[in-house]
Length: 187
Image: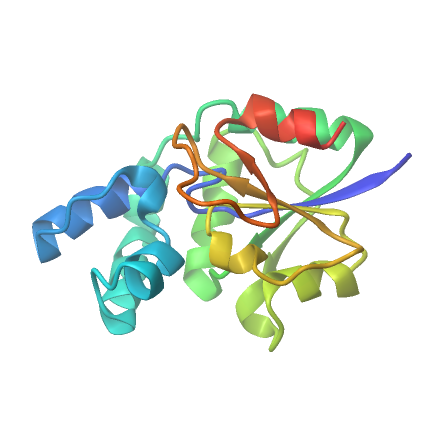
């Protein structure tokens, strides 16, 4: 069976969550664990920062220098390689332009260029990530922001990636605390 996977970049593949955590503390005095540095948690659920402040943080973290300084999320490189053995792997990210170029450069630097089929910027679509996956016949979406998995889809299985943190409330999507668990959901 040939599968198609979409993996979010920030906080799921590349550990920019640690950079966001530091940025939040230094610029807003907000203390959160790295797995809660997503838009849904910070702006919608907890109201720690505004959408504009979140966008400013994303601009900082998405810069070439910041991106290339980030380490891979533990197990992510191996997971992408394993997924590529059974299917096609795409990066589905909100990054675009030079930030997307930085993601590609980071992937090359970390030995992933031969395992990633392509990069898709969700900003080039008017739909949410689940609908994008459905329209592109992508079977699995792995993302650290539960807000990107809010929409149910019969065609797409969503996996919330929490990188070491338990999910506070139950969601309709599967929840993985590490890449080993995420891979197990897709068996």
